Amino acid sequence: MKKNEYAKFWFEKPEESVGFLLWQITNLWQRKMNAALKDLNLTHVQFALLAGIAWLERFEKPITQVRLAKYSGTNIMMTSKVIRTLEKKGFILREECEADTRAKCISLTKNGIQRFEKALNIVRNVDENIFENKTYDTDFIMNLVHILELNQGE
Image (cartoon, rainbow, N blue to C red; front, side):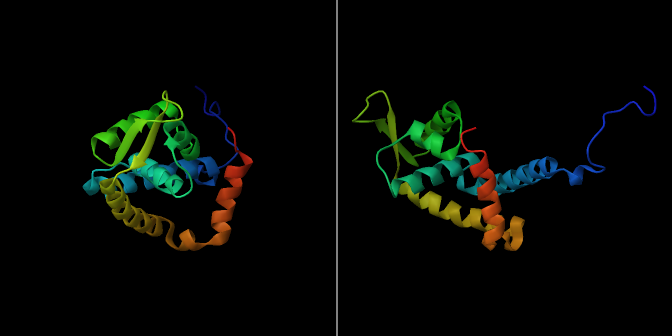
């Protein structure tokens, strides 16, 4: 390969790419979350789905696995696998839905609520440490919401 035969980029340094930075931050965030949640016997994905159930239970019941996956933006098959793990750990109940016996309805157990509330404090601390004061910066948060809204349905 000749000296000038290499892939061309639109930036001079990787740190000038929003996608690269987002990828790096996401990986850092997930590593720190998983490490912080380890003592509670939770992964970050398990926490995220518990959070989705906890939030949805405030406003609607029953909650199906499909509804949780759509709300959380997760793959239905992965959601089902994680839900089974959370059920084995005693954090959720997974039962046949009355309205649709083909669907599984899920809810937090008392143990699940207690574990989630402990984890929520840990997650908040990790967020505050990684993002510093940005967790309370309305403009920063609204920019993230705007990006999600622009890409809704994908």
